[in-house]
Every structure is written in C-alpha cells, then in structure tokens.
Length: 104
Ligand code: HEC
Image 1 (cartoon, rainbow, N blue to C red):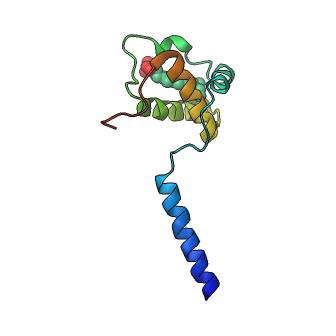
Image 2 (cartoon, rainbow, N blue to C red):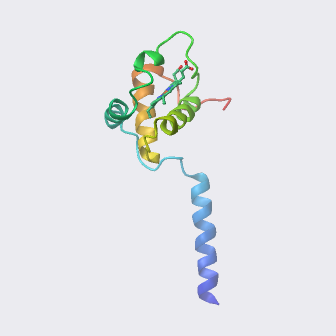
Image 3 (tube, rainbow, N blue to C red):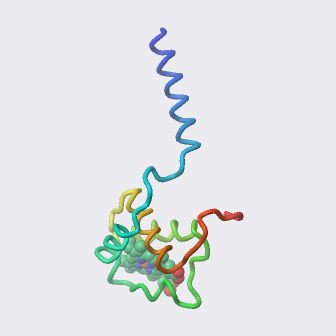
C-alpha cells in the first residue's frame, strides 16, 4: 500500500513538473538548427521566404508552429530539441521575435 501511495505522489509530482517546465528541455542550438535547415528544409523554398515582405509568420509561437508544420511537410522527422534548434536559427537569422509575447 505504501509503495502504491508513493508511486501516486511521484506521478502527481512528475505531472506537475511537466506542467511548469518550459516546452523544450535544453537550450536551443542555432548552429545545429542551421545545419538541420540546410540539410532537411530545401526543395520547396529557400531562406528568402523568411524575409519576404508578406511573410506569414508574425510571432515566435507562430514560428515554432510553422517549423512543426513544415517538418511534417518535409517529412524531416525533427525531434523536439531539433524543432527548437531550427526555430532558434530562423529567429536569430531572420525573424528576431521576442520569445515572450503577450497575445499568444
Ligand atoms: C514540402 C515543401 C516544404 C518543405 C520541404 C519545407 N517547407 Fe517551409 N514552407 C512551405 C510552404 C508551402 C510555405 C508557405 C509558403 C507560402 O505560403 O507562400 C512554407 C513556409 C515556411 C515558413 C514561413 C515563411 C514566412 O512567410 O515567414 C517557415 C518558417 C518554414 N517554411 C520553415 C521550414 C522549415 C524549418 C523546413 C524544414 C523542416 C521547411 N520549411 C521545409 C513548404 C515547405
């Protein structure tokens, strides 16, 4: 009984930790993101799409969402850390969004 109780407490604690942790576990690596982008994101567009006047991404969160969307489209199979590496690269090089945004 005591064991089951401890497991429950541990589980509850683990779930609480996940809820308060940032989405990504490690600091994003923009250099790695650039390598991934160059290796996996060609074919449909080059980096000009990130500086065009009518670009479709307007916040950091939209950029993360778009990287996920294009990861699927490209079938690049980036893992969670790699999604943020690529986002970091694109944000540092082109978008320069603040990561804290009030409205989304
Ligand atoms: C299968 C084709 C395809 C591949 C491969 C692809 N993309 Fe895209 N991407 C698109 C399309 C289509 C758009 C939208 C273009 C438009 O609306 O004019 C886009 C737009 C984007 C934008 C938004 C540009 C803007 O307007 O600000 C980002 C960011 C982006 N892609 C990231 C990536 C990343 C990262 C990868 C590699 C994981 C990738 N793309 C690979 C098709 C692709």
